[in-house]
Length: 244
Figure 1 (cartoon, rainbow, N blue to C red):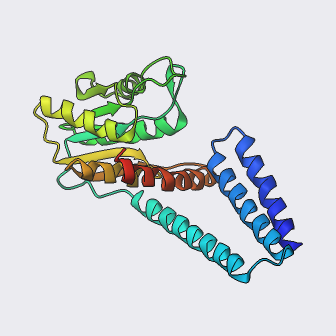
Figure 2: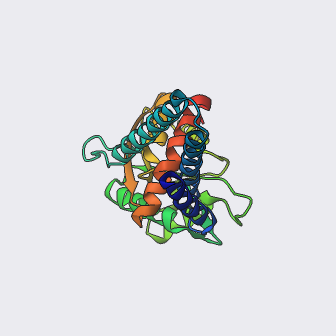
C-alpha cells in the first residue's frame, strides 16, 4: 500500500508540473514516470509475480535515475564560465531564445547583457546573434537581439545577424559560415548562452571543429534551472544521436 501512496503523490505532482504554465513539464513527466514504475511494482507484488521481475524493474529504474542525475551534474559543471582574460576570442556567438513581442525574454535578456559586457571589454570582438523566427514570434530572434545590443551601446557594425537557424547546431554552423565570409577566424569561439544550455552548445561546436569557451547566464529560480538541466539531458542524447 505504501508504494501505491507514493505512486499517487508522484502522479499528482507530475500532473501539477505538466499543467502549470512555468516551463517545468519535463519535471512533471519524470514524476509521472516514477508513478508508473511504483504502480507496476505494486501490481507485481499484489499478483505475486516472479521476484526477478520486481528486482529487474527496481534495478533498471535506479540505473536510469543515476544516469540522469549524473548527466545533470555534468551539464551543471559545464555551465561554469571559462577564463577569457587571455587570448579572448574575436568570434562570439550569442545563442537565441524566446522573444516576447519586440522584446527579448528574461532568459535572452540575461544572455545579451553578458554579451554587451564582453563586447564593451573587447573592442575587436564581433558578435553573431543567432536565431530565426518561431511560429509564435513577430520578428527573428536575431533582429531583437541586435536591437537590444545597440540600445546597450554596441555599434551596429559589430553585430552580425544570423536569422535562419532553427536549432543549436544551425546557430553555430551558420554563424561560422558567415564569420569565414568576413575573414574572421572560427577556430576558437566564445559561446554566450544559459548555463543549462552550455554543455550541448560546446559539444556541437567541437563537432564542427571549433574550440569553444563559454560565458553563461544564470537561471532563476532554481527550480527552473533544475527542470531545464533535466530537459537538456534528453536534448543532449538527441544531439549525440542526430548531431543537432
